[in-house]
Length: 312
Length: 309
Image 1: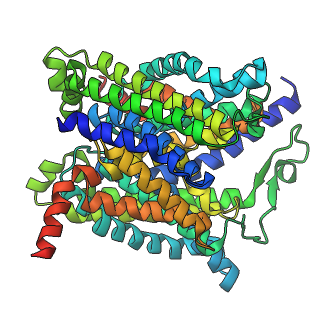
Image 2: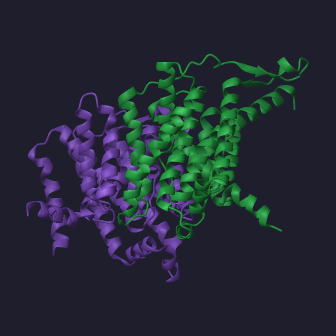
Image 3: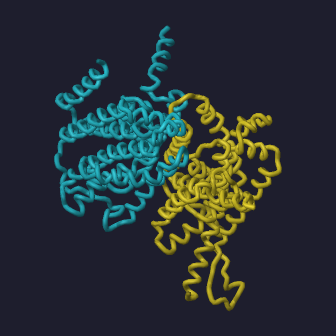
């Protein structure tokens, strides 16, 4: 019963949240949290369940964002069409990149994914005609000024992603993914076509990330290669969200995204330390890896035990 | 091919070779750590940035030449690396987690802390050490008056290259001839066997991380007379270091040297003939090509030749 009740309760709370009259700034934070939650869940499917730690999810985020951006910039079509179109574009990209990177394992895979994000960033910077280079793409007229509609759109995306990831993980495919994570050779010897299932995990994960990218273009109204293909600000933050929240947990991405977005905003407000949020992120990451290697949600029993011991 | 074209080509090759020598030093540090620890150190470039800052402040405050700072920044970075391995990486080796990539992600965290700490402390300005010999160079026409083409050899670049050669030579001697060096090689070849032979693997890990950091710190001192310094520069050099490592073959020292030289020349050629902005793309293309067609790196080609008969 809990498996249905808790998500519905959370969804209900998130649905009524804008009705209590939050400020535009608070709504902006909530939109960002939900967007990062979706990216985190997408990464978690590939990294947490299938064990393929990608350092280059900015590649898919950026391709999604630029799909929407180029539709507007070159073809003068509403950037919202970028969301459905990005599914196809990102799927093709992920399939091709996956063909190269999924042959690799461990550190090779990590490095190849990292490289793929960087290659796309530099290529976008240098193809001036098509992508407007480092100038980026500016959407002249935002669809809505107030944030409530954006909030409901990203909430719908997040909720659908949550359901999709849960269904996938509970399905036969989900078990294949975990088998690949635990021991790829053993999985192969049991008759799992590892390349095929790794590709499936990558493509789904990439599509979900790409949708967020297309949403980002519409929401922020401005993209450039250094924002959407950023190594630290996209790829690494995605990993941190999942590491802090909890690898291979359902709620880890939401917890991690909440902590990361709030922490970033909080640090930005401290005078003199504005640019240094990465130092705090780094320290947080080191502390989490040493003391809570499975994240806050994953190590919840451990935290509970600690509290009980303190009280006793 | 006209004389002018030949001149450009030769000049490009020369600068590529000089750059490659420095790259080799960065790659060597990375490959040592990779060999023993079996992880990629994604804070490698940031460690180099720390070395560059040491050289910069030594020059600015005390007027110490960056080339002398090699003997200050190298040991300083050695101890920084030892501390990182002892107090941060070793504890993570013991904890149980779902993803084995925890250690790699840990080095990302270390890199982020280092580069942001530098930003907070020193602002993100571009800095350089204006050494007196900064722009002087040897010219071919000085030696050979009637030369049909003109080539130049920048003095700081050449000195840095020679320093890199000397450090590489010293490292080779250390790894081949000393007991600690042999233990490090043994650990990197087979951890369990080394353990059975009585090698203190835990200590070798610490020494190796220190050594790798020291090397890249020294490389930082060699880079600063010819390059500029800013806190975020680390990431770029981390990428370069791992491209070299993959190109050379994981954990192979000769491979790292060759990989560095190949990458230096390749980048120089891309910058001249395709465009400055594309040099990083060339770097990654060569990386992906190496992963696909030569997964063992240059080292596997060398090995094949040795055992081929």
